[in-house]
Amino acid sequence: MNNLIIPTLLLLTCIFAGCKKDSTGNPVSGNTSIIGMNTPVVANTQNAFSLTLTAESYSSTASYNLSFSTDSIACSLTVTGQTTGNASLRITDSNNSVVYVDSLLNNQVAAFTQAGKGIPKSLQLIYSNYTGVVTFALAKNNTAK
Image (tube, rainbow, N blue to C red):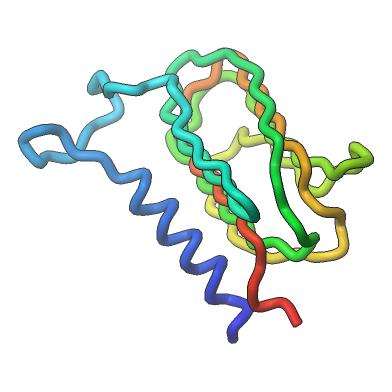
């Protein structure tokens, strides 16, 4: 039961972070111009990383150094409105071994914990003419025994 707390909290955070309203309080539709479109919002601290991106025909390669002290992690990924282009997310450890990888090509909601696949040290995101909303959160899993 305790193993579900962190992924559930991360999932809820991702869902609420993806909710947007305009200045009148109305939900923003997919056709509305959003300030910050194609600009990733990133938080990167000790044992935690999060990213939200609303992309329209977006192409970019970005790498982030991660500072995790454990291989026991909780992850949440939400992809919505994915209509065109290609995108991938890849997390590696200090030996460039894959800790986690995803294509970001399907609308999805995923939340999980994992251990024993390496301590996350680097994250690479590659977008090619990508349209969709990506919300990703990675955190140290504090419920691991």
